[in-house]
View 1 (cartoon, rainbow, N blue to C red):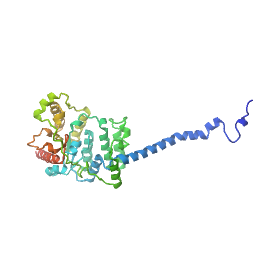
View 2 (cartoon, one colour):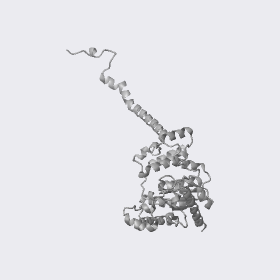
View 3 (cartoon, one colour):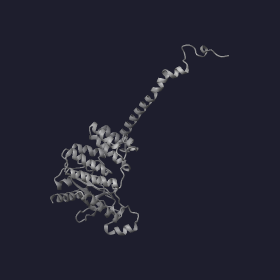
View 4 (cartoon, rainbow, N blue to C red):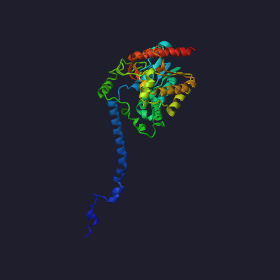
Amino acid sequence: MRTSENMRRPLGKHLPFAEIHESGEQSVHNRHPLGAVLVLAALLVAANAVLCFLLEPFLGSSEEMWRGFDADAQIDTVIAGTSQGLSGIDPPALDAALGSHSYNMSTNMQCFANSLDAIGTAYDQRGIKRAVLVIDHEMLDAQRYDNFRADASYHHGKEAILPVSGKAQDALSFVTNPAFIGKPLSVTYWFPWIYNRSTDISLNVREKLAGKVLDETNHRLANGFEPSDDVVDQSIPFVTMDEADSWDAQNPDLDTLTLSDENRAVLEKTVRFCRAHEIRLYAVIAPYPNWLNIYNKDSYLAMDDTLSGIFSGGGVSFTDYNLTSTEDLPLTTDDFKDVGHMNTKGAEIFSAYLGEQIKDAEMK
């Protein structure tokens, strides 16, 4: 027997399914996805903030460089490059020869595009007249995306000294760069703990709570230079120029140096920028002891010719100080902290010599 409509649906307690679907519950259903998105976004922002607080160092190397630069209004000379410049050129030793006021803008694994950005920013904000560009062989064929942690850290650090509008402009310019747009970094850039992190969470938190650096290890001086008293392992046998041919014959798989088209274009752009703005540019290869251990000698010398052609074509000095004799530049293995970088003692010797070389060039 068919049940009447009133028996199936007591008046005032339930609505037909169609009415339910078309009325209030539909509105709730429509609002639910937006609310969920907002809640999820809030949770992501909160989680990002917590992870940044725990994992980001209180003052990372790139941010420390930019804050030091921002605090020094007298800069007329800058050093740009990778960690080889950071630990290899000591501003006071350079300034003693040049009578300059220099600042070290080098950062770890700094790509050539960011070296140009550093020089350009120093010109815009300080009107610099001189720049030393440290050429690191590791960066010659490096792709920017493969170097994303260093690249992102450089720009994230730069934003610390920019006004709000400048921060947004720099960040958007970075994530929309052809090297990054459409790739994970264009998203992960907004999560700094991913690329700018220290696993010493305890120190990170203590320094942030204290509002100051508690461990000076691996931090810069006010002039941007990173000092070190370390000395490279003296038992490592470093290949000399006299031994290179024999070494190369015994080790046919040594690295062959190449320069990517992208990096060549950036170096040429750097030359043009400095020439257009009357900045005296000095391109150098800072000494490091294992260059013949890892690179084929003929390839190495051929790359010197390539770089010399790029820089000399724009009227820029290029010098490879690995080729300078120890009689002129008296560095020993005691003057290096590891196989690729000078320590403070070595940097003072090299910087004083470099300063004299630049002074002589400018007096001609």
